[in-house]
Image (cartoon, rainbow, N blue to C red):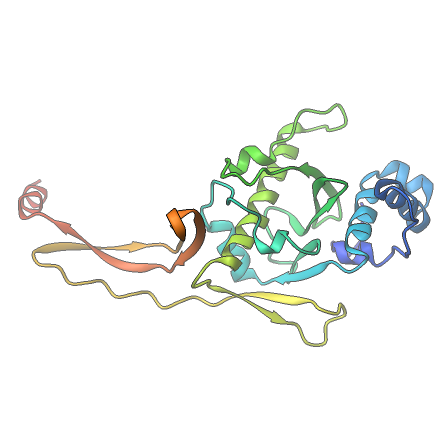
Length: 270
């Protein structure tokens, strides 16, 4: 257990004091971790070095987003299978930390807090569960439209007791943070970012879900059946030679599916 009663990556970072030594980033992170938590604890829980590496990569000030329950449910239910052609803005700037706004609404599974940072040419995902346990996975997406799940799968390691659970977490974490990034970049995005007043952490912003009104179905001649189309992301090519890609959020809407009179009569006779 790393975080104790507060399963928050930010709370762990708050125990680290800089500045980082002017040396290789990984060595600087190891030194910071030992200074903050003690050599014995770092030897027992090596993931503490990753928390220190996050501190080094962000200079102690990562971008912090507090995810509200409805927003988190939208992220989890959005179907996104492939990586975009370039990293979303969320993953292009300062290292980011995502935090569940309430203990009753985890980000996904039992993960309450999730961070992504890049250091020395590699990208890492850190998660904290409700019990305070830490999970770390190296992640190197190529941003070429590859399968999102495959980009996050990890090789077997003698240091990991349950490879299946560990790999499943890495895929879920990558899926969650990429989906959030794409949603925030998309046109007509149903999520909004707002500064959180009286926050303990300067610059903290909340992620809120603001649903759009469902469009009314268009009347069609003949018989029709009403169906609901759930909200979803749509990738659209644009620009010179359709060389650029943008994402559009299509809000849920009610549509009418045309049914031929012959099919209707056959169905009613059964």
